[in-house]
Length: 222
Image (cartoon, rainbow, N blue to C red; front, top):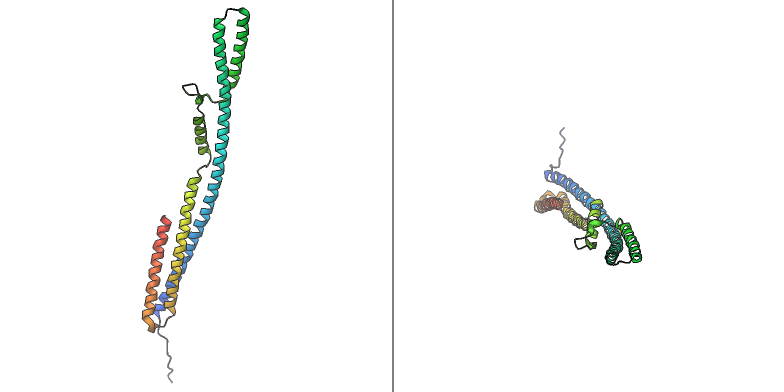
């Protein structure tokens, strides 16, 4: 006795769609992962920018205060040196012994005060005119601070902005991939008799997938 068994014909199209759906799902996961990493890195860059800004303000404030302190000491030093020079001229002109003694005492005190002040400020900032270069000290001290600490908030803000764009780009690609997934899923569930609609969904899905992959690569390359 023969038994007739009717087998449903293999739908290779549907099998192919299942493979492409799995590929799209994997690419969506990849886009989400890269987007989340970029978002996290952008958050760190924002934090670094904030700390760099605070350090920059503190550094400028401290350097400026120290420079003005040095300038104040230099002013005292210059005043005593000028006084000592003036007393020296008077000493050379006078012939009175008592006045000479008094002038010598005053010169000694002025020289002593100038000597005490001399070690309290950096002499390299005295220019050829004998004036204290306040701006140069502030600039050099800030440059030294930049080599020791991260004070460049602008660089971190630029990196954060680029990472935000990367996150946004990956989100756009994930949306496009979702459209690809929808088209491939619809193509896979339609009856083979509706082959035109099936192939249209397939082609749209593949097109969205290809555009998304290219977009992800360009976004990664920045």
